[in-house]
Length: 86
Image (cartoon, rainbow, N blue to C red):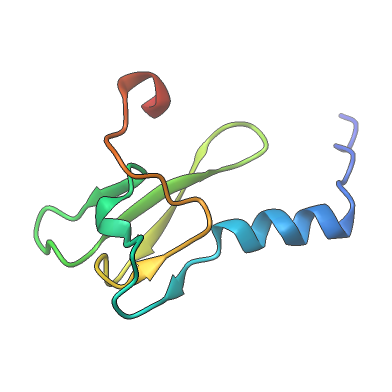
């Protein structure tokens, strides 16, 4: 099996920075309103972010501890459609 070609270091750092979650108290774009956030069924203040994908297309989930004050560069308001989910 041949190794996959690596992206340049700058492109990798920019891609990681765009989905890096950060705490911003009172943010205008909280995870709560993002279509990529899946709420936790037992605690509505927490959830999972599903915006990240691996090179093979698999979902890379991240735990969100505070959906009201966390945000990232990939925030998209709305609901996740079935086609985007699969």
